[in-house]
Image (spheres, rainbow, N blue to C red):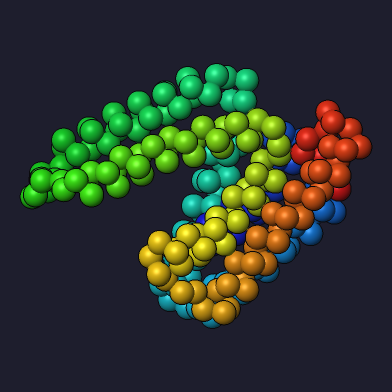
Amino acid sequence: MLYAGGILSSLVLGSVVFREKVTPLKVASSLTALTGLLIFAYPFSLAGSALFGVVMGLVSGLFDAICNSIRKYLRHTPREMVLATSFLITITLLSTTLAASPQVAVTSALTLPVSAAVLVHGLLIIATGYLLIYGLKRTDVHIGTIVLASEIFISLVVNYFLLQESPTMQEFIGALVIFSASILIALGSIRSHRKDPQIIGDLG
């Protein structure tokens, strides 16, 4: 639901806030990605607490689309300044919350593998933020959100080799359909760039 909410919200935010064109290719890519998500998540229930989970997933997708829109809005601000300010605010809020919580306590020392994993995790978060700002500076918010959904396919491949997790055939097909939406966007971008090297993002 996170990706579904993000794709739908970014389509609206991109067209309304940034006046991005809603082209046939964007619509086709969005429908392809949403179809893949349905295949990947099926069967699912909308009864009882499950409905609340679906709604919260869509809301989180909306928040994600808003974050991407903000990154797009800050495209003329130095990326280093945006990252430094964002992480400074995050660290300050987390430190205040942890310090005020009586339930937070260190029960054991961090082992070397855990410390290394935490370090790599933090570096990857910083790199991801930098790349998102860089990428959204050069393309539409909606396009960027569709491409981000390919994370599902990539995570299946990574988890298969690193964690020996084998996806079901249905999950693999759904992830592959989602990934194909990114391929559609990429092919459209190449075609548009060949027509006019100055055009990036206005696909279709």
